[in-house]
Length: 251
Length: 236
Image (cartoon, rainbow over all chains, first blue to last red):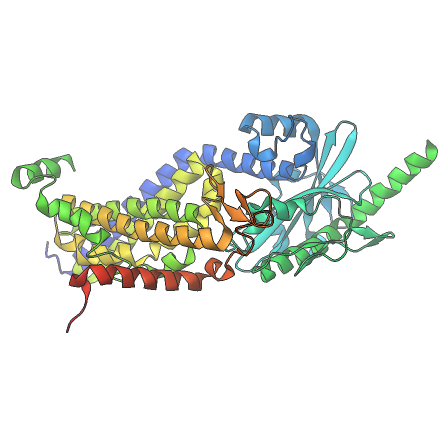
């Protein structure tokens, strides 16, 4: 066949496309199960990273140090998963771990479903909330653990899709940033104030953390993400706060 | 593939003078970044830390080598009119392969590098070598040329990353298992500038963290290279 004819070109392009498509699909199918399990463990590890100091797996053992099996086991035995709507009611049709925050973020606020992980450790309950927002280049997200007083932050973990390494990526890579959230409070005299990420250094020891120099947009993104993300959980948090008060009064 | 190799072995040696030159040329005389000035975009973007530079280099060596090999194997069958599209399909499939392999083998590393892996497709070096070399040469030589150029790119990338991370953040290999914290203002660092009497004046250079710093460093590298390698100086 003439190598310059249109028929040859068409034949070449079509057969190449088919071969490449079949090959890549085949490999994807063969590796899919393992890849999805890896992703599942990765996400669960990120949730546990918010309660790094309360894992009870030994001194200084963080979520990153756990083996894959340990992550799954802790999730199985100590974590209760709750799915919520934005008016604070529990919904049954979906598991918290299956909620895709990237999709939820695109929906109108009233239609969103929120994951909540209740983590039990030595008689204390931690409430782990998931938040998602925008950084400089792409999306950023995180998990915030609240202590049982539903006010003090026990820990936080952040991740991002494409922030600049060494600058915005510090929200994940530099443990100092997420550690700064420990012990901060989100309510001031009963009113929701969130935690402010302040450029140039925190000024209020209870409600502010240090920003990241050179990554103002990402830090502002974290600030906005927390303010708006935690606010979605407020109806539910108010309900359980009420319940806690009642049980305390009865005692 | 095996057939082709045996034919090659009869005609020309596996590692003759020509072949060694293909591997060593891109390291100095024909370096993709400092001489051909290809792949500058990713060299500016990913070099703020050493570790991502290293992984990016490995991925580019792999993609560059094998895309050259496959393009060269197909070179007599690729219609001229659509050759660039065909090259792009080969590169994109290999990059997708790298991405799937990482997802399967090491998910956290995949998460960390997902942006850069996509960047390989747009790396001018890969396509530049396919057009300039693989379309006109035999598979084994093209493969070596691809590898050589990948390594030549990687060497510069890692060197730039080294300088930028050391002076910009005071650490090396941050994010990898062999992270070293060398100089900084907290007790975590080997040289604590708040305690040391000798290094009290030292502060990290924030310019180094920005992509512009890579431009300066690559410029200085080109300068140094040309000052001792006079072959490269354009006398026209």
